[in-house]
Image 1 (tube, rainbow over the protein chains, first blue to last red):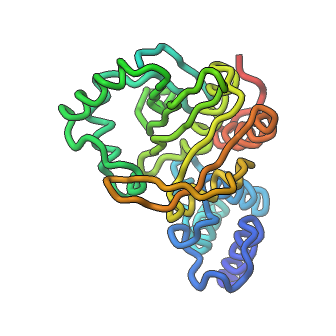
Image 2 (image 1 turned 90 degrees about the vertical axis):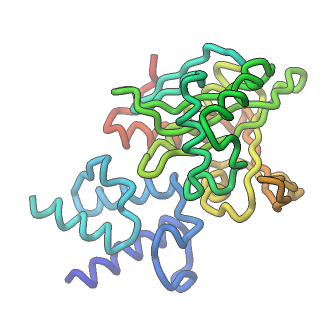
Amino acid sequence: MSGSSIAEVSALLLRILEVAPGKYSILERSRIEEWDSLKHMELIFSVEERYGVQFDETEFMSLTSPAAIWSAVQKHLAT
Amino acid sequence: MQHDLKLTGYRFALRPVRMDDSLFIATLRNDRLRAGFLNRGAESAAAQQEWLQGYFERAGDYYFVIEQRVGHGMDGLLAIYNLNADRREAEWGRWVVRDGSFAAVESAWLLYRMAFETLRLESVYCRTIEANGQVVSFHDHCGLLRSPAAVDLVVDGETRSGIEHRLTRRQYPETARRLQMLAARAARQSPEPLP
């Protein structure tokens, strides 16, 4: 479940960044030049809509990989 | 230059740089993680004060602190400079946001409002080191157009290949709309026009 959901977040990320699958072997914000500040906010809001959660602004800048995003989503869904 | 231009957004505001910001400026610009593609600049508050003294006397240069509206914490810096009054254009830059801040999008929106609505410019341009991929990407995604020719930028005495982006008054509304929408949502507010 977690694995497939991280994969789903990864796919969402690539779609928003308009990056072809396989271009980056590691999906980490610091390694992806297309993952700029504007796209980061678009990604956060798309994830919120997809999973019905709302991140706190203090979380925004820590959501730097699909795994980190999915972990935060799970935390919000559990509360 | 000494100016009194201020602009308020949702979570952040722009206010003029003051002499007592010297330590913040020196510290932020010497943070190589956040400002590694900018000139290091003054390395101490005293040296920064000396630089600011020259800045205060220089025309056509508007340096701002990106400040939180609540609590007035400082999140970053940006500037509009090299103003050409005849062509109604200027450069913008010195843009750096502290680690952990999400002020980038809103500060860019405030910057463009300042340029086009307050200063009534016809266009603004910015020059970014090509290797600074996320900032180049940011300008691309904001809808700025790349100038056809590469530019050479000198950073800390080293010449680096750069990219020039430009936003014109005609393009400004669409760019502002997109940035404002994101800034408002990040602040959990409605993107209605601000007073």
